[in-house]
Image (tube, rainbow, N blue to C red; front, side):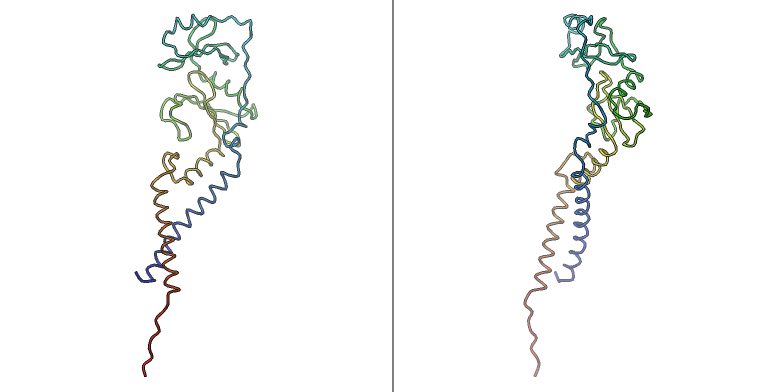
Length: 238
């Protein structure tokens, strides 16, 4: 291959490699600049201390197990039901998780009002911020792990675009998202070159870039060779 063709290859490869290096620089700078605790949205919520009063009248766990023989785990927790904090049993089984009133063992299904109230208790922003509550049973958005479904989604109309996700069964906070996290996730996608699932760090795109980078180096070395190689002197005719 003559030097001219090597130069053409080198220029095109430099464009491909250079663009990805710019993307890596920008995405890397963003991911390094922000603290992970901030990106995870820990500042959006507060931990709720909900100790159960000793004088609370609860049904014995033996009654819970008798009523739910397939239970694999039973927890006594507190949850906001109809605007008040009440003790409930969280019963897990292969079929899923069910809340029971701790005193009557009556099954509970959290509704939109309950989730809205629970979200307000967790949210650290302005209490007057408007919020929209929606139920997601299938087709999880890209920012949510499908394994967490079904969930309640609460979107707050604040500067950060905060979103809180709650378990549909227990009303417990399962994850939180905001616009800085979404931008982080976008840059992470560009950084690892996984444009679909955003989890694979050994994609074909990345492998193809590695090959292109290798060809870029080879073409550069070839151009150096052509530039510095000894040139034969032409004999002058007498």
